[in-house]
Amino acid sequence: MKKDAKISNAVIKRLPRYRRYLKELQKKGVDKISSNEFSSLIGYTASQIRQDLNNFGGFGQQGYGYNVDGLYNEISAILGLDREYKMIIAGAGNLGQAIANHTHYYKTGFVVCGIFDVNPRLIGLKINDIEVMDYENIESYVKQNQVNIGIICTTKDNAQEVADKLCHAGIQGIWNFAPVDLSVPAHVAVENVHLSDSLQSLAYHMNQQADLEK
Amino acid sequence: MKKDAKISNAVIKRLPRYRRYLKELQKKGVDKISSNEFSSLIGYTASQIRQDLNNFGGFGQQGYGYNVDGLYNEISAILGLDREYKMIIAGAGNLGQAIANHTHYYKTGFVVCGIFDVNPRLIGLKINDIEVMDYENIESYVKQNQVNIGIICTTKDNAQEVADKLCHAGIQGIWNFAPVDLSVPAHVAVENVHLSDSLQSLAYHMNQQADLEK
Image 1 (tube, rainbow over the protein chains, first blue to last red):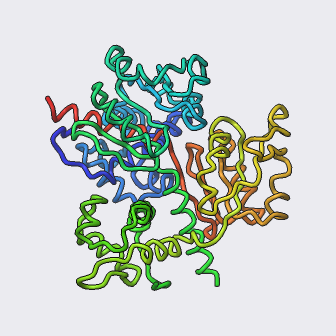
Image 2: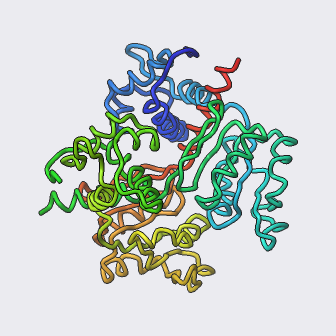
């Protein structure tokens, strides 16, 4: 893998999808796959697939195709999924609880170790065996436990303050569900899940489809 | 608005963000904004902003800038937010419940009118005043109530079957939270929220940052 290569965000966004399809192939006992076969499965063109994977040095062999296990492991390593991440959730409302319950993540090394809220009725509860703690202690907890990722499930008005606290405590990444764009130091990675934006995109595409049918 | 124009998905993805920032400006009583001012706020270049908005015929006036209310309303109309959407949720687990509780959406015309599950322990419950109904009746409910959007919050193994049922019942859009890509007829719009993919992107960017600091 060319560590110094500047890889576009669009390519990075496609890698988890490649990985998902490779996982399905593994489950079906498939050993190798050509870029053409992979193309008809995943819906990207064969040339796009070759181009994407060439970004990382290319793992295919002419006339043989891609080794499924090898490619899966490589992509996992590129994404940084060959290690474990400690995560905490800020905000124990419905969304925070849903994420705490989404144990699916644990399989891939993302472990939620704590949930924080300001609401005294929530503090002390256990959600999926994870304790809801007082938000006051979030900074010291992150420091002491070397938490890697903070998941922000607060309202939009509180999100920036939470982000500031987490950054101050040394967090490396923020997974932000609040409908607001956060301002963080350059060394902190942020990934937004703006659910409203996604729903609005859907509405747009629905109306385009309806226009086409007129 | 040029209805026949082919607008790239990347532009569409940015529109909800423009709209969010315009809403904030409205709240602050700002009437007009230049593309330069808008640029420093939203983080896109002024030229990108002009280019994006030109896709829709352009709403700015040379030497004046953009009218905040006007642009907000135009973008809302382009996204199709000037009407109401009826939504149902398939899967009343944690994620389905979190979405049912996310009343934030209702303000923008997205109304959840029903939740469906196969689990007899959940059927009959009310979540945020919305009834959990028997999954057996999902198809007839969608037809009778002219539901526009189906939200899939099932496991990945059940998602395609649910999508098939919804499409058969005449759904226009699917908001898919299951970690699988759905195959649907061309006239049905799909928007995916692949949470695991998003978390893996975050991990990648965290590791890139860490590499830079080495």
